[in-house]
Length: 441
Image (cartoon, rainbow, N blue to C red; front, top):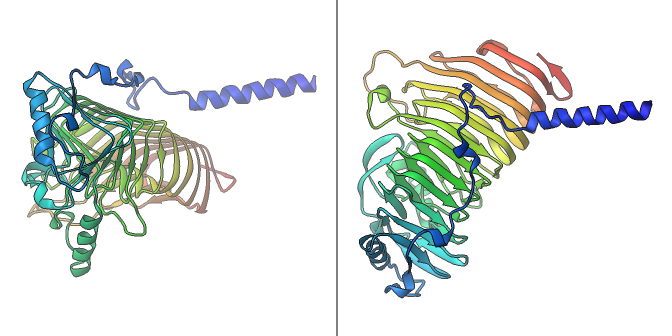
């Protein structure tokens, strides 16, 4: 009989564990997750149309020559011939800003490196989007504007060659500690704008001069098994966010490794006292981040600092190796914000803090607005988390930040600072939450 009881108990524990880690079929607001999010099938090279190997169309194998014009000519040729895939073969190819056209794709072969020029003159300034603003700025190394169905694939590397940009930034910051990120001319690695049904898979994105990959006003994005890195030592690669989602809907990030000297995944969408009135700004909705690993980063998942509305955001089944924060809700006092239905679940590993919610006052500017916009965090859920950290609950909202309906469930936290304050959240529920071996409520 004791053996039978033990067996039943073991089975019950297994079922309970399965129930905790089983993927939900609904977004946090209760709406059904479409089947689109369950399809993580890869794009095959053979499905991308006619193949244009750049070295067969006038691009030299000389790894020291900047060949922007020659590579762009191949892209334009593919476009004029009805589309196809531009293939970067094994070897290193230097380039400035490249612009992909409708019905064209990029394939970076295993052993290939598409490397960015470290001279900003190779990235001509043009209308763009940076830090929640529509402005003239430098394009990325790889750009796709209005290219529905655009794909980046292959097991090669896209390298931003960012060292000189980083050095220039830190020199400027040394001269003026209050300098903004835009004061030092730096290109991004990938910028995709107004493009739907985008898929980026298998490639390595590394050493970006600025943000690594930026998606603006896009719908239906899949980022699968991509490795994105930029160093935080010995020299820090400033503002090298791995993935910036900026007014995007329906996004799946799956099987990725992200380690950068800034936020790993940042949800943006506009900033300023009247940001919610600007047609160029907007919400990020229906975002799922799953089965991924995070190395060093300022936060695994960040809302802000240029964001007005994020809804139905799920991060699940992820391992954190060395993040400063797991979830960071940046409350910008000069911008009206609403972060709602955000769920972080089935997380293991180590981070300096589990959740961080405080005013973000860097470059604060009300631009003459007399009243301060209100900001809201509502329906924030942390569930099934086993984490070691220094700080459990680093939450101190500003006078104009309203936090409500936080739910912590099935947490096992080991923290040097296990303190928490339920009074800063209206309707704060804790169920089966253990901090340093003690249940809290």
